[in-house]
Picture 1: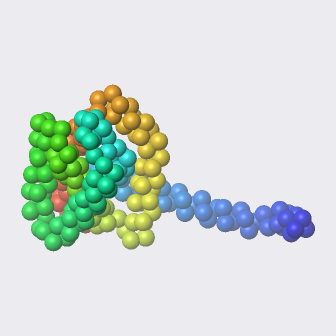
Picture 2: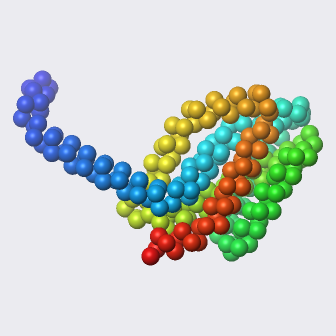
Picture 3: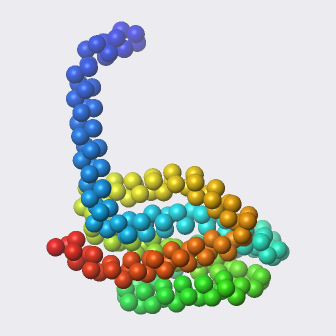
Length: 221
């Protein structure tokens, strides 16, 4: 093993240097391409990023709505609520593919308004809490699917997975900060403070959706 190591260190430098150069050039080229993609659709990239952030945050803290308002629930009830959350995401995926873009947009507006209304006039009842949580995950799933489609249309096939992986990696690294901030907000202001921030994001997202079609036309030219 020592002989092999010495041979590799002293006789394979050129080969290793060539591989490093190729990898470095490929990385720089991919980085430039990803930057150019972000410049073309910055708000869509940010929407994709924040959809991942909100999904992870609410996946971590959705149970706190029962704790904040001293709503007594059993573990079985929490399990059923989690199942309903999964079903709400499946429903979002199903309706996204089956309904037209216009109908989906109207449904998005309605559920966004219903979520804000429910938060503003929230009553500490189990049923209302479950409905609110399911609407939240439905909205997050829909926003993720919509911006994912736009990203797929605006990115070449050879860089699509790389760019999405890049955004996902940045999102996971950001969670080190966002989880801490979310925990602080939940402990200080309660779970509904996160929902208000989600409402602000949805408001910005609606403006992004309004310009999606025009953005796609510019990219496709």
